Length: 143
Length: 144
Ligand SMILES: Nc1ncnc2c1ncn2[C@@H]1O[C@H](COP(=O)(O)OP(=O)(O)O)[C@@H](O)[C@H]1O
Ligand SMILES: [Mg+2]
View 1: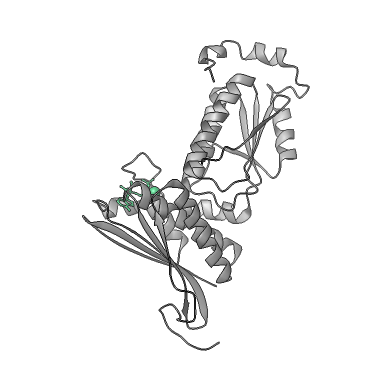
View 2 (view 1 turned 30 degrees about the vertical axis):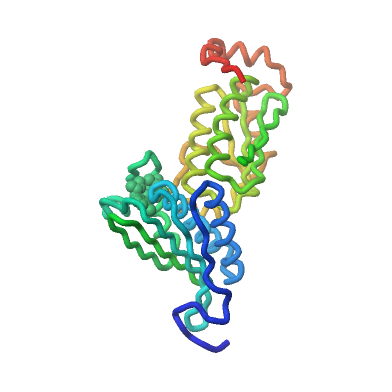
């Protein structure tokens, strides 16, 4: 297997863009992430982890971010494949990041496990948030 | 377009087998439907089969915990069966412990568990059981 780039391989199908504006969209994003996880040949446990993380983050985009979108793609680095999922909204942003990431803190009557929990479930977790919106990118690599 | 998860009554038991990819709306509806059915049927045991669920996230996990404690208040015991190993591992890492939720490997084992609990009469002979739970009608039999 040749090529070793961090970005998605041009021979792969392009990043998939999906709206998250309803409950049903969260389910659809979950299913699309699962399909990619299968393509990346992740183990059953790793598939379950990335799909669960995606479910949490997609729900946050919908509930806290007031809706937005997901960008899903297969990525390659050296010999390994992975799934990258980015969740984007133009909502109010996260006021207190430390508090939100600590776990158990919800501003909306939730369990407050979405952010802290999904971070534990993935290999890479990148959060950017400001008053104009939030962007969370996660990656799960094949082991 | 919200799916509804069917609730099947078998003797004094309610059996819920979740076969759809749960949206939050469907999850909330199941919670409500189940509490209504417990009250309407006077069931003393609930078995929730989640073997078809590929993931349980914090929303569904909370629903399971809520159903377990809600059913207890309504004098019914809930047992969750068939959780996939990968789901159990993921739930733990997510940070959800589901401490108050009884679990069993499969529906048969759950049935045995419930049969052993004092209030459950497998014969489906309601009278004795209803006597034990006297006063619980006060919870109110909501119309619908
Ligand atoms: N996309 C987002 N936009 C704005 N705020 C967010 C976003 N995601 C998370 N948050 C904030 O971070 C908190 C913690 O999120 P999370 O861990 O998923 O818990 P929960 O969703 O149960 O509240 C939320 O209650 C919310 O205040
Ligand atoms: Mg959340």
